[in-house]
Length: 190
Image: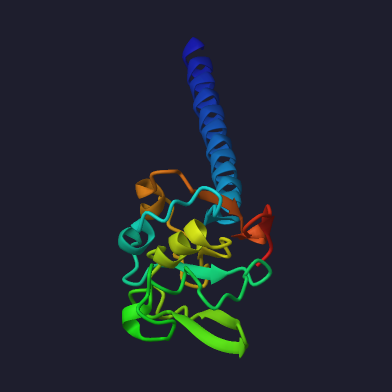
């Protein structure tokens, strides 16, 4: 009667192995789901303290029009008559002529406030994220212009092509609840 005992033991062994494999599979699936949920809670953002305005945001985004846009920190802005983020160095005149503007797409709108103050607003659909205005503002101004990823446009790619091309590793994952890195502050809510 040794054979029926061996068969029973083999069946029990195979059954226990199958149950164990199923439990491992369910555990792995649960772990993967939890990890994926945590990854979805992170979004790409550009750290304005590390950004060197290399123009990779405009040229390396997988979107036809980059998800990176210029923003103006109005708290820092000097509302200058001669804004070095708006005007070319040594402009012909301090007017809104295209030949005097630093932005290649005319995405910065200059509006008279009162003498000698002007407001500088970003027309985001025109902004390509090249960073020329940011570089000008940082070199000769107060640095109120900086680049940020706009999450209504960003695909939140698993491996961001801009992040791969960024020479200063200014792109990083941040919690979606604090998606915008405002200049001079830690991550803030959108």
